[in-house]
Length: 325
Length: 210
Image (cartoon, rainbow over all chains, first blue to last red; front, side, top):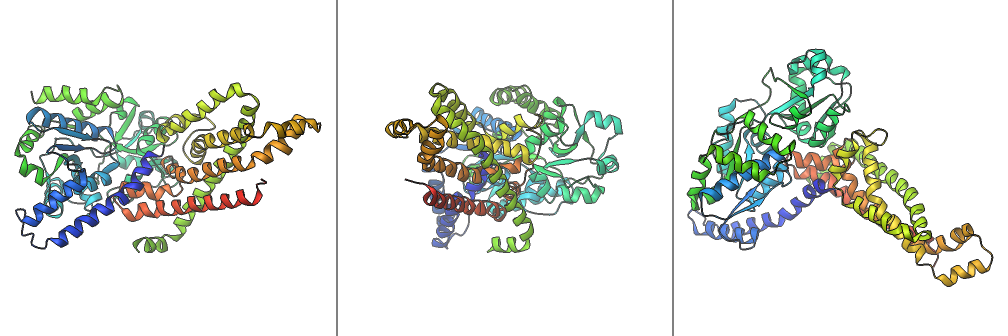
């Protein structure tokens, strides 16, 4: 029980010593001239040793704690297994953006699927604003220079926040866009996930841009439970994810972001640069998937996992044999 | 240090969440005691019910909290979103140590003492309130103590159904990659658990007749 909370609470403490060690090691080898410096190599191998207890040459694939992230990780893992000789280890369903980011920085995982808008606002803590291309460019540059992490080509879909209402309500009040929502909002109750309430590109900015005022401050709860609460009429508006399989299954409708408030959230594999240098075949394998997965396709794959409860390994295998035989 | 700055900037919010947290633990523990102690007594009287009841409490303990919330949201009266759902879940998690210890405490009373009571002409009820419960009080209290300490930690998940509490900081921190926020929730929860443990330990020592 309490798994979500405990994972979040434990990890920073578990991570802290590793970070201290890495700092100490870096201090011990001041002559790290660049990627080829001796010190760097020793530090890197020492860290790999500490991080994974002398792990052999293999690729560790991570994922955040929701279906889509698990699915993308499984697709990445299977593609590496199909195209290279490297053994792959899966560490799926880790505790969210935070945990994945810390894990890949510490070398505990080698690759996971991240979203450009999430990296831009939640990890790099920039204010939302610029368009799609500049978000991706900025994120690529800063990840490379700060942490030696490489962004590969995006999968091809944009999983944005989806302001979602019940279909019956949308029809009764003629709601198509978030702007339409502003008129009925004062009588309605909203329930949002913590991430949406807290992020720079989340509720605060949305309510400012659209002039949204609800009957009470939005209820803060677990993202997965907001769908349940909306479908059962406990709340009237939620912020889901646009590629979620639940939306159609629960007869919900997504309102259009007619004022283009949200930045783009293109999913792409983030890989440790060191892994790509040692194994260029990983980059080649994942390049085959670039642009192959659009919004509708991603929603279908998510629905197969969340609504039809199919095994994500089978879903990933089907998709891969179809698009990259 | 960043943590201190955070608290001084958000002292009212932090105190509010701490109070919410305390209420959640207090209410759920009181309800769990009200259900668990009589159940434990019943089990001591009817040994045949012991396995199914304890088995059920054991199973409850293993239900993941989010799954439990998922089941509870659509239910009338005990479900929905907010504090009520969280308290129901906390009660479910607190039951096992209370039932088990109450049963163990009463079953552990020396049969000779019980016989002596009967010999003095005590009724069943008198035997319970004047002999068995006082003798079992130490074990029962330590069960309540365990349940309370666990409850302080588990209550952080109340934030997943909009019931507030210190878990709000943990969930918010996890959502936006912010260590300070996570600690702002986790640290006082840990201190609270230690304080509850110490306090109930004191009660145990002070009031238990041995």
